[in-house]
Image 1 (cartoon, rainbow, N blue to C red):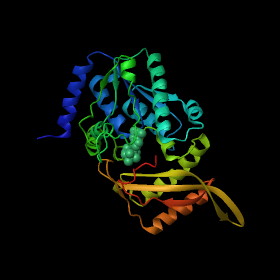
Image 2 (image 1 turned 135 degrees about the vertical axis):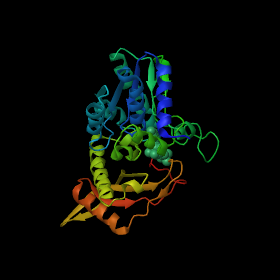
Image 3 (image 1 turned 60 degrees about the horizontal axis):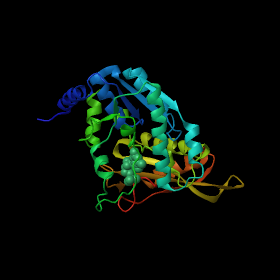
Image 4 (image 1 turned 180 degrees about the horizontal axis):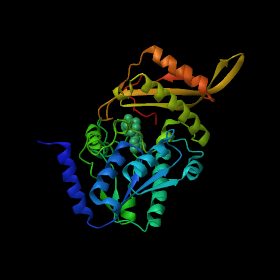
Length: 319
Ligand code: XMP
């Protein structure tokens, strides 16, 4: 008779056993996985845990504020927020290759994280919200043996360098189970039901060169799209929905003027674990409404397209 309440108790005991009176540091991404891991670990060892949230400037609208309020105000978990936007943008300048973006962001994340860990006087353990599919997909892709499709960004390399041991209490779980565990730990439905968001953030939703200006444009379009999805009551029926900003300019007409601005792509898929995905079949009128709002409200975008590719052969993200 296996329940999440039992899983929670087992893991709390295991974490206490593993950590003893050591100190744990946990990198938060703002997503469900690292949040649930942190809350579970905090339940086990209290303030022996410190969370670090790196704002790399590649987050969605208001995401940083939401994390701050959840951890500080709601759970009272020690949290350090690092404003690293400038150094990430500087490092991403001129980088267009998707794997180079991932590698830079991963390495820079580790550098920032290490600096913060040192400022905190170090830690014995590093906590991560690694899930079962992460364990599988970072090793091989379901379509064939040992082919890395995308090098997923995590803090690999850091534990050895800083002599830290990993604490990964979600390693046996799939996403839906993590959400169930989150509910069990008192996370509200809105947070628990959040769509997954990749570690490299908006950088892999801006094909071509990333800049603060492009991130700002994308944040606005993405927020409008998700606002429409929530208002239509469709959010929970979708695994992941997001906007991408393409490095293509097209001609448009606005009032009696000609425009020459960027194209925005919209993506929405259903999935159970992110390894395969189907396109979400919106009504045409819904997509028209999103396109109209985005073009009217976001300076820099004058055309919107919808992505009809399932996974495989497409991936969920565009990079
Ligand atoms: P793809 O694009 O490979 O995405 O079909 C599958 C799932 O993984 C997420 N994803 C990432 N998550 N770092 C992450 O932490 C990454 O580099 C990364 N790339 C993709 C993606 O959002 C989807 O949920």
